[in-house]
Image (cartoon, rainbow, N blue to C red; front, side, top):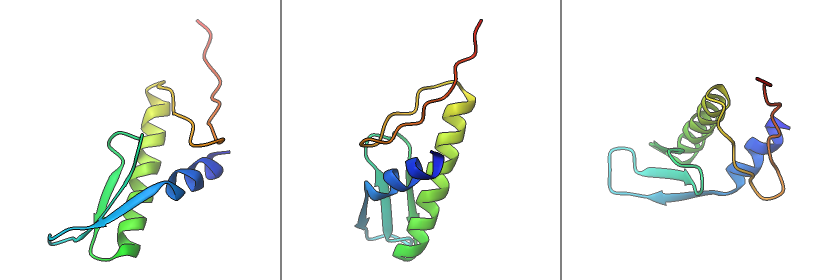
Length: 81
């Protein structure tokens, strides 16, 4: 389930080339704060995957909902009070 979510999110990634020291920029729309840069496209993709993984785990840790990506969603058990 988690790998399906990560794959689906990465398929939604958008990349741009900027005039910068690390010219490759990538982000995943709808996932606020999930972006990365790199010196080439592959390093940008790796950095974006790391940012996505951190974002998902931090969201789960904080008990926040993780939005669905297409048909893929993370259904997390809720703690009862």
